[in-house]
Length: 263
Image (tube, rainbow, N blue to C red; front, side, top):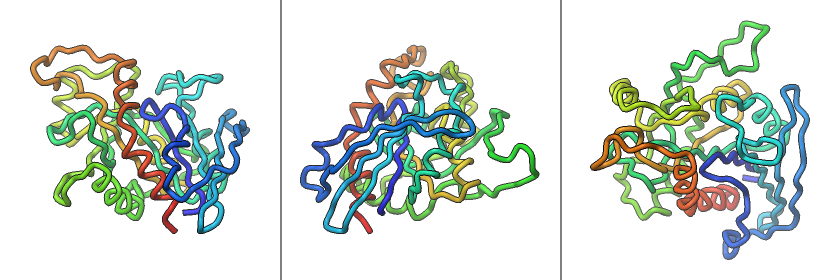
């Protein structure tokens, strides 16, 4: 892949990975921090120009929660149209999102990194570029099959999993910014949700509209509300969730490196 865009959330605050480049056949040649103007607002991007045996590569990084120089914008205030249009206009070949999620399924414990295979969005909030014309986009398969297949192989190897390890889950979109109640998590599980978060499907919908390949790498940063072993009344903390997600980035870096290294 020549030009990869990466979206970071609470599971990837910034793109600093000089150590990860060592031994991967990629050399950082130039870093540019710029602000892209869009119809929906300004978007800060970090563009990394890399060299390899195959020629030049480019990595474009966006922090989805950007907020006047900090990564603090609450999920319900993110202008996803600005973010996605800025990345697509950069000429990227594909977008890989990184998300920290609350785990519901017992086989997705904190520390595991997996993929979104489907999403469920019952928030009732539209995420679309088409507000003036009647355009209906198919999202039967909301994520790129090719990207997910490649990422599954990478994540399996990076985490020393067997081929039978489950690595694809359904993401439930919560409205936020509050975390869920125990009762909500129980209901989400009954309706097919395996993990819960507050942002990613809005990006996936917009990418389908623009026909740009998109995949979501999901870090299980915590058990969802009511699922903490031995303490079903444990409170959730945004700071601790973010901190835990950022401790588990090795498989994520592996995904980035491998996608860029592959043709």
